[in-house]
Length: 119
Image (cartoon, rainbow, N blue to C red; front, top):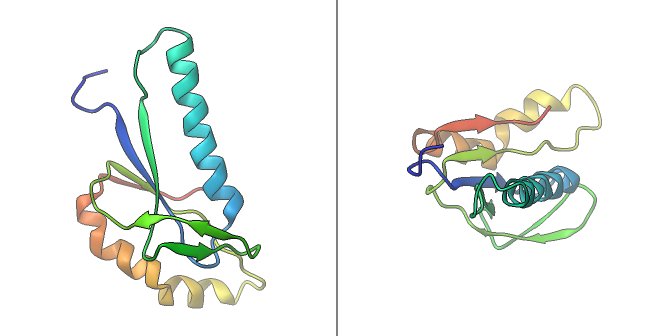
């Protein structure tokens, strides 16, 4: 691992209506990855710096929980965009095409090396 790419700066995009379990799972999974890598002697430092980012300081997840976040920034190596709640298949196109977060994401993609969307 070249020192120039580690630690990876990972952003988890939080937005109103996102699935909180996906935000929490990604953050926790990368925390575990950091601890395991250090524990087995693969590194002395964290491999990932994780930031929960949003357009505003607080968002409300699909389950109704308020989630604090830091303002969106573009100093990320990778960005993870959690899923959102859909109650009928007909909502998918409307939600995706009209989402302020997805519009903003498109404008910032040039500064993010990868877009990862969990399935």
